[in-house]
Length: 86
Image (cartoon, rainbow, N blue to C red; front, side, top):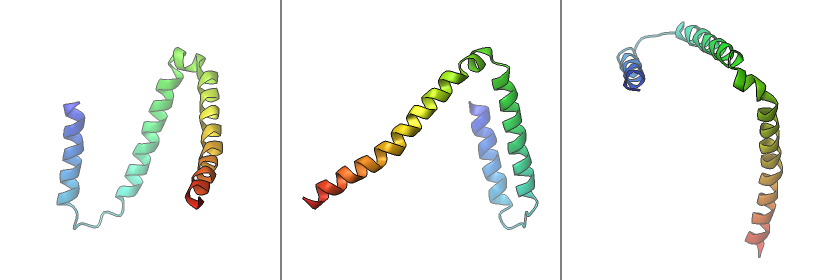
């Protein structure tokens, strides 16, 4: 935990010290590293039997949460609008 915080603070320090420099190439490196992290996460998830076996349940839960949000937010907005008129 302290190692992660230390790495983050080191990055912030480097960013502060290099703020006057023109680092146009840094975005390509960051994008590449994000893709590498996503790939490694996919390998880790794909190798975990518990997650792979429960994928259909995870998808169903995501669908239910999405439908609840898509239907619930406009419904609550209409209810709130009617209360503010009265």
